[in-house]
Amino acid sequence: MDQKMNVYIWDMDETLILLKSLINGTYAEAFNGSKNVQTGVEIGKMWEDHILQICDDHFFYEQVENCNMPYLDVMKQYDDGRDLTDYDFSKDGFGPPCDDLNKRKLAYRHRSIEQKYKKGLHSILDQDMIKSWRELSDVTDSYTDMWFSAAKACLEQCAVGNRDLASSSSSAVATNDTIFQHVNILVTSGSLIPSLVKCLLFRLGDLIPSENVYSSWEVGKLQCFSWIKERFSGPNVQFCVIGDGWEECEAAESMRWPFVKIDPRPSSYHRFPGLTPKELGHYFSVVYGESDSKDNDRLAPSGS
Image 1 (cartoon, rainbow, N blue to C red):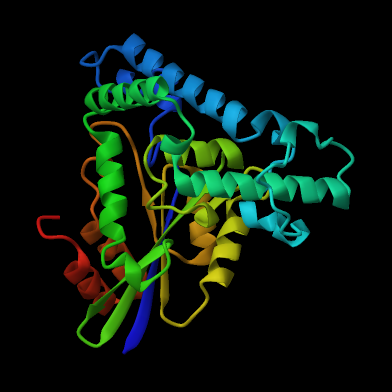
Image 2 (cartoon, helix red, strand yellow):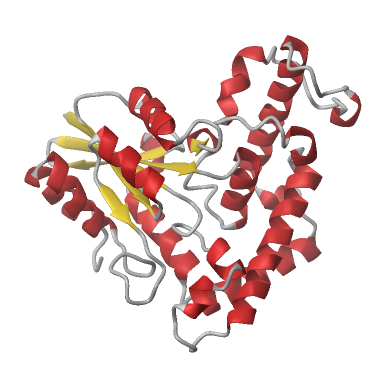
């Protein structure tokens, strides 16, 4: 069978999730009075509080805030595989200088973060925090007309197929004589650790594994896209970038990849709910050819 792969490269803020536009009121203001601006601000600030609390309490953010890396595996070469079961991260003296010893300690933290990410927030949060998180999710979905649920559903639909056929980072499905693999990647301009926590809080952890989360904070989106192209190199690999900002647009153009611009305003063409894998398939076809669009149409769930 022929093998083809679609790689979906997503931005996070104001694409898969809304946060900044809630906090600064621009999301509500675009609805010309039909949404209460202060309600959106309060929702955004509650999410911000949750993110920072989980970052600091469970993901070493206070310790690693000044050591932002573009992805977790970048420090793996310094990890000697030590058993971390009884390791005391609060007393290992991690900090400057950035020598091999401290790089190893940072690698330990990255490994611990990766393990927590795989287990999910239910393994580390108490019942009160989980209840508060669920209630905030429901309130937010109601306020944003199901933006978060729709974005997650689109990710799920992009990763159609039996996940047992591939790693957790992708899924595969056969159409006639072709095996199509689908991979969701996140490239965010935010720093790495808060971005991983956001993925968990907004229930994207099962759809975007930790090794597929990239931070362009230090290196820029073009560099991240170059790494992704190298990682998934092959003659039958297709890439599509979905985001709201100029940087990912320019980087996609440099890579000659299709770009889908997301705009939260109610009158905009691409937003959630609304964007579907079938529509993304048409963007693939513009760059990669009409036959690939037909494959994407076949793989899109019915009714999309």
